[in-house]
Length: 133
Length: 306
Image 1 (tube, rainbow over the protein chains, first blue to last red):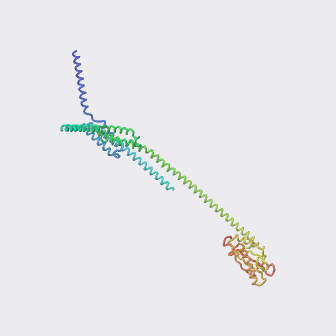
Image 2: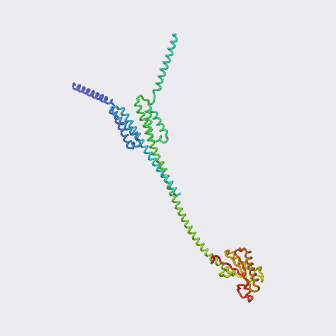
């Protein structure tokens, strides 16, 4: 009987301890975590931009993306996680813009080249027929 | 005085109330204001959406940009948050435009390739036409060569014909000469017209005795490059002077007749030889008759007919 009571008391104490632990964890969570996913997304976007030759076709945007990512990292070290998240998102948006601009520039260059060679073909054709006349 | 002050108080109270109302209204008007830059992003998005070449391309990116612009347009007291949203909206609109432009450029390639193909086709068609033209030219040249060969053959034939005809002409000449009963000599063809042409002692031609002369006219018409020397002769009967004059007048008569028949007088010359150069003896009537004659000497042509 007494033993049973004792056990019940210990059980209560354990529950209370557990509850306290949850509270402590919750307190820890209230200082927001680093925006890891956003930072990773920004890094990937910058890597993709570099692969698509953004350094050549959209150097301003690529540089801006790097700057924003650095600002995000700095904010993380200062525990300004919301600011860090915003910088990371801005970096990603800038890097995606750099990629898109590089693609557009390359596509346009390909078209220009095609049109130039078309023009050459047509010129040659005219010259060819001119020679025969 | 008191009433005046009371009135002033009322006026002042009214003014204050009005001012407060104005301030309240102003507060109402300024409350839902869009963050700076949001309307610029919206403008860029609207331009993109109304571009017929771009609006249908990169539709997901444009939708994404639209959502971002809407978020940016929300009034936001937190200036940093508002700026962040405007920043994202601006970049997303630009990104959507760049993606649409990329897609448009890619789609244009089909058009450019089609142009190239049609240009190539034109070039090939022209080449084919040119080749066809060359074949035609070659064929025409072949035809021309054939024509030249034909022409050469024709000329050869003509030469043959000419040769044949010159032979024919020679034969014809001989025939004419035979008709004239002319004798070929070193001086030319000599045609002797007997005294049957003339009445004895007279120089005018007997009418109806011109048959042999007409053959001469025909001959001279056929061979217009030949000239004629007409010489009159007599027998030895009578005085020398009389015979000389008679022979001249008879030669002249023949010349006149030929001229009347259309033979150019420039081709004709006449002279009298009198009784000189008899062709037979004057001691017989037959001999004297042969000596009374007019000889017509037809010159040989400048070197043509043999």
